[in-house]
Length: 394
Image (cartoon, rainbow, N blue to C red):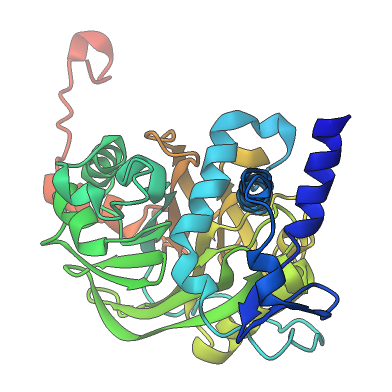
């Protein structure tokens, strides 16, 4: 009981905050002569120190708990710990985006714009497209938060190896990357630096094959907002094909989280912003291709509304299928598609070959390529008659 009384007495006395010019100020602001404080028995000081130490420990513990609770981004349980790490890492990667000034408000929603089909009178073209969320913070920088450029000490990884393998098999015309932090290093490690021109806007990168295409214009528009990453991009570029003269409008998007939420403004606003971007920056007759990690699957408002104006070509399987390739091409335009696996990322690497424009057939029903090959061979079969077999060729 005596110990408890001493502890209570020490607690009350610890409320003394400071002494100023001969007076000690207490919590209730009543003045006590400083001399009285100085004359108090010395045995009370150990109890004061103990209580003060306990108060400091409690304050530190409270701060730690607050940081842990506020910093933990927990995805749905079905995604598992691997995807928990992925979401936490995306927060780190997007820190510079989160620091950007948020937009003044969500866009006013009206009718969705009507888009077009590619110009029919221009020569046909097969377009090779690639899209990949690189999982940069974990796969490239190995979660080294104190060393954000850890990747510079490596010679690539399983993702750069996948990219090199895919580009060797299918020389892509355009590529879109999400969670892409060092565009030059990425292409160099994949052996593609001399073949592609690449641009980065915060954590998204887009590239085109410079041997086949020339750049007409490019830009970025912030089409979504989430509380963890800030503004979300839709990169775009308008390209002209050297051989056919066809123009491609390519968009690379990284969507907001949580999955299927559409971020702070909702999925309808995301779809509206992307489609109005295409309407404003592309020209009628352009082929349009939209790729990316939308953080939205086919159940979401974002994807449902995009599908009303752009045709889905291919999608992945990660997180229920949030990686997509869309186009404004007609039915049957998908020539081939491939899921290259994740390469160590938490997303699939996707590619698609798309037919832009219809191949004109010659009177024999052959495509121009087939007709050309036949002319080059130009073999005329020889018929030999044998009287003993009634003149039929042998």
